[in-house]
Length: 277
Image 1 (cartoon, rainbow, N blue to C red):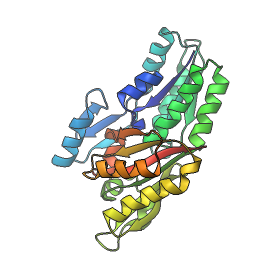
Image 2 (cartoon, helix red, strand yellow):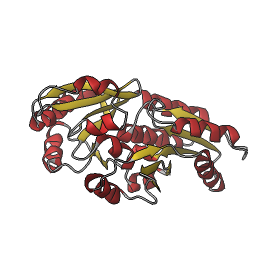
Image 3 (cartoon, one colour):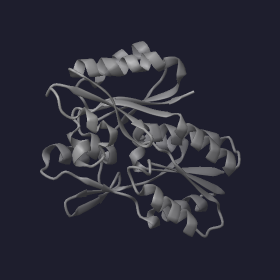
């Protein structure tokens, strides 16, 4: 069977990873001189506590080549006869480089294919799930790789961070830099284009930002194949989910931003990621 590997920026909950048998290679989070392995040495709860109460803004670092090779070895030992790796966009992380080197140096006689998703967070997670579902049907590695690449091309992100300050300070502001400035109460809307954060507009209040996301889902509802809500514990999440059910009654995956994405998007963010048909 072909197995799927992704990285911890996918923001998939543990139950979704287990259900689809997706292996996660963690990035590293640095708080000053302290380095912690995402999802292993640093839980989501602890990360958000430290981000919102601590004096040090964390940084993220790509997994080592060895980390990927360890994951490959575990999967081969478990019976995998091929591996497809779906990584965070190479334009915002060196993770893909580590995965490629690990694949080139892997000597277990099992093919490993590496895919640059051009995505992050729940959009990456949904692409990994789509690849895993194809793999579960039992085809060869070429078909699974093609399914992964196809899903990545169909991934979309539309969200509102509470502030762009974390993106700016983390160096991941990208095309959203155009949103900085203006009135203090302006709330940004961001998307992901060409592998980077992009501006999607700005509105004058949080309420209007939430409404814009809901309108975006409603306008694109007929073309959405599957959808995930991504968030960093905003107080208005229950209301958002309730209103989302009215415009998109199909089942949605709910995913909390993890340490990697959370470092750059900050608290109180909410948005949707989805695959188009």
